[in-house]
Image (cartoon, rainbow, N blue to C red; front, side, top):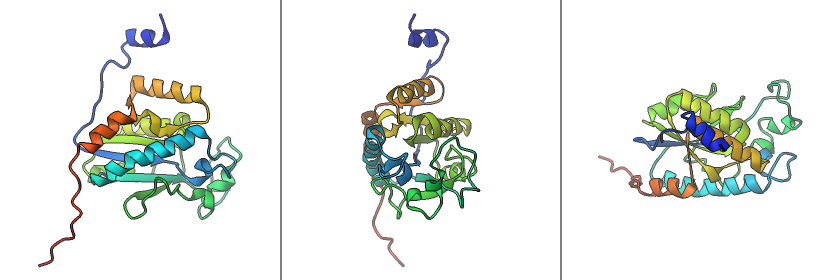
Length: 217
């Protein structure tokens, strides 16, 4: 019995979650220190492809007026940072270029930006309250890295009671096998992992947001 069949026989991935009434999108850590190849941890083909795929997803989401919460991981100083087992924390200092969001995915006039200190975009940031205020019951998770901050954000979204959708092309990791294994594992437990095309089809079917200027009395 292969691994997939073994988990299926135990009851994992036995149902689909589906889209609810209203989606919100989180964009996790697409900051220059992780997407720009001029930084030690930045770039790579898989991360770059995820940025481009997320940009495609965000266009119809914004057109439909859905809330978008983007985040960077940032600290006031190296001393303020958590005990990460990485060597690049100096590029996560607020006010430095590494904490700038990748311009391909950020719309500062539309998106809500939060600064997070821990892996999950939901941990002590107010994103859950923002989505509740917006009437969101379904969270679409994008960003990097799949095995770290994406996994943490998916688990927290699930723990807050949201439906979780994970477009497989919209998250990236430095290793293809790690990326695939984490998508598979999250799909067994917490989220619907689906092709970007299916998510786009849903978003593009939504009514367009009204953009007319209000009529003043």
